[in-house]
Each structure stands twice: as C-alpha cells, then as structure tokens.
Amino acid sequence: MDLSAFGVRASAGSLRGTDGVALQHSWTDEGVVAAPVTNGAQVLHLSVAVCVLNDTYRESERLGIPVDGVAVEADGAFDGEWQSTGITYAVTIDSPASTEDVAHLQSVVDEVAEVPRALRAGAPVTRSY
Image 1 (cartoon, one colour):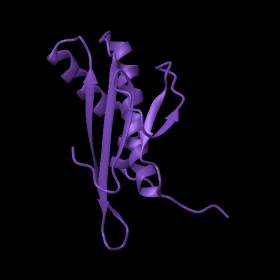
Image 2 (tube, rainbow, N blue to C red):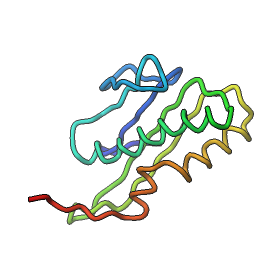
Image 3 (cartoon, rainbow, N blue to C red):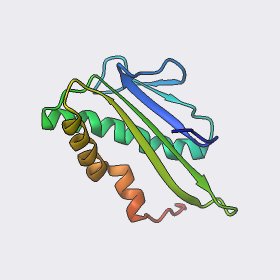
C-alpha cells in the first residue's frame, strides 16, 4: 500500500520496523514501532493500525493460529472541510499457518477490531466544559 502524508505503519514481532516511535506492547516483548506520528491525522489512522495489530495477536491466540509478526498500514484522506473521507488498512502477517488460516484470522479481526468498528458506526465527538 502506498501511503499518503497521512498514512502510518504499526509493526511488531518479526515484521517490526526500526524507524518510528516504540510503544510497549502486551503481546510482544520488543513492543510495537509506529511511524510516522507527527500530526492528528496520523494519530487517527494509527489508532486503527494499532487496534488491528493488537487484535491480530489476541485473535491468533484464541484461534490457535501462530503469528510471528504483524504489520498494519492505515491511511486516509480528508475533504476541503477536513472531514475524513474514510480510512483503509492493509495487514501483513508472518505466520507458519496455512494461507486459509491466515485469511480466516484476518476476517475475524476485521469483524471484531474495536476502533474500526467504532469508526464504522460513527460516534459523536463533543467538547466537555
């Protein structure tokens, strides 16, 4: 996936990148590397990427599908009023499991990942006084 100026990558395990911000991670000893993270649009997209990465590890454990590494790229654009025109993400999984098992894992994660689900449903954002 070619990333725009708003695109990000979160990676862990055998696919962990070397450039970016290192974040502690409960599923991997080395943590997650996220990059770039320099503006709010990237942070929005990073929330999707990290959620999908986390849920890939969680669901792989639940389903008994071994995962050695995960990389998630998330990107999107904004219209002239700075409203999101949508977010897309792509997942790379390093696993000794069959192609079918990995595809099943990705399908399950797409259904259960909380941040993508919340964004798909829409949520009000209000300032607290």
